[in-house]
Image (cartoon, rainbow, N blue to C red):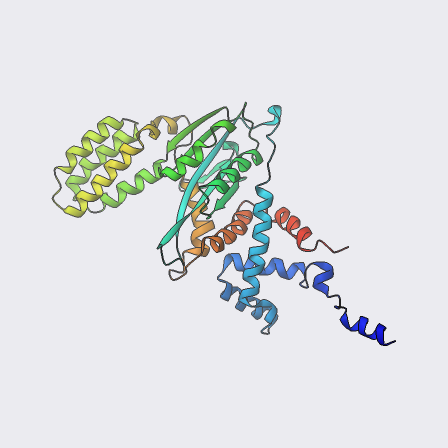
Length: 349
């Protein structure tokens, strides 16, 4: 009896968590993750407690952060798994890939900020115009990464996103739109072996943004002259645009404005091979602007991670939030969460 008693005392009692993988109901975990992806962890905790009409330790911000992290890792691991191409007879003839980035304040004292990359892939058939100022992509796949891994993660995610949208290397043509940053071109050029043909285009939206900033500081007389530079770019005439811009700089005495004009000159020169005849593409109803990419950046990054100007991030923390937000933005959350549940509750029967 004494031996039996000692043996029983040494046993560790089974817990709900040890048997089922988690002691939390999946509906609560999902709610915590969604709230945590849409609000600060502290605000998410307050909202969940308000729903419960009580302060529950189970809803503390650290628990929410840990749940977001664990599920985000499952989601991204699944999306990084090699994905087969679409069969030739079912493959999309063309896909549009929009690559952009957003800067986030860093918790790292050695750097002020870092850039998170986002790519959205969709078939032109799924792009529709709502009205003069609004467009909609009815079906798309968005992916993102904030990791400092020489773009390994984001490049693989983009390849898989293209395949999720029906790409085949022998059938599908890719049109890639970016803001002109080298890290964006690096991602799109990585896709050359995954498509029949690849066209890189410096999107008109970002060109216009740069012109607007300068244009707002000019007199009416100078604006007319400055618009001529933009007109040449609109028609794909880079040489004349650069010549006009160089001439225009001689009219300006303000040092700050001169500096901005020089930046614009270098931006155009650096991206000249990606500048197309935008007028012609518009006439032929071909993509030439990535305004929908800005929507992706605003919806995925800015709404959660930049609206609070005091918010600072580690790369890993930002990366985890992005996985949940891109999943929801792409409307794949239901299937992603279903896969995550099977891993969280791996012992359940």
